[in-house]
Image 1 (spheres, rainbow, N blue to C red):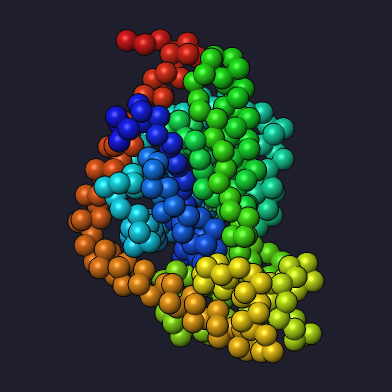
Image 2 (image 1 turned 180 degrees about the vertical axis):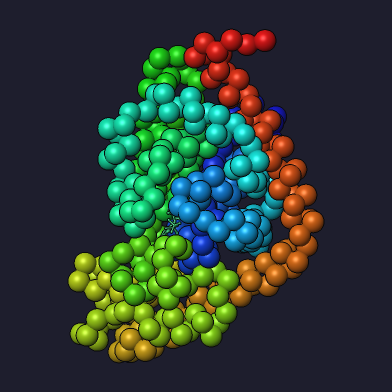
Length: 335
Ligand code: AQP
């Protein structure tokens, strides 16, 4: 890995918060794309520090962090080829965040839509960490001289502010950071809630609004049967006027690796019941092998911890190189 970085292979970085049950939206929008970068050096963190921006039950957070690590591996990320680690195990993330805070403006942070949305959702706990979330995310990305950041559409604005911060910093001190690009395939950018299809599917929303990667087949069928559609009865892709049906069609076409036209054509003359059944079959077929691998991985707690420890050391080595450079550039006294 270290040599590979010197040879300027592309670096890919992303992360997911262990803030709830990982959803089909997280899978389709992000996780599934994590395995698309054979020729790059990839780092995927469990963004546990970000998760603290919303109040958590500590024991559950610990459990969900291990579970998310097992999901990463079960989804096909080889932990010897990809660096899979916990954000909190690499102190450089928090250290760089402090420095970058001093190069980020209150005005630009207040424009972040996630901050506005989450402030509404958690009106009793609008903490400084929630406001500062994008700076920690910028640090995650910039520490590794990242070229590409595979995320869902909701995170685009955060990658953009990361680029702004990096450009500002480079403008002052020279080429310290690589300027990252977001990697957001259009078709999968935003999977919608099953109960309110004009809203994004989110893992911290109530259970019945999303399908979880670890849901049992009967739960997947039940949730999809209850998914909100519309009353005109026509299967047509039209996100503006038919958000529920269009969301189901998106899930189906992505999982079946078909074009939208072919997916719609395959359902011609059928009703919403058949559409929901087809989506359920496709989701179950996609998730069953992942769940099988997951069960084996999560059963080996010691193996999982050893993998996270080993990979945190690999990440820390790389992160430290950037952090040392940053400290020197900004004038912190080195011994
Ligand atoms: N509905 C979605 N469609 C497509 N992509 C999505 N992502 C999340 N929801 C969808 C992508 O999944 C990754 C997970 O990011 P995160 O855990 O850091 O937080 P998030 O974006 O805030 O995701 P959630 O599920 O909505 O979590 P909570 O409820 O905790 O806020 C990102 O790449 C995201 O774009």
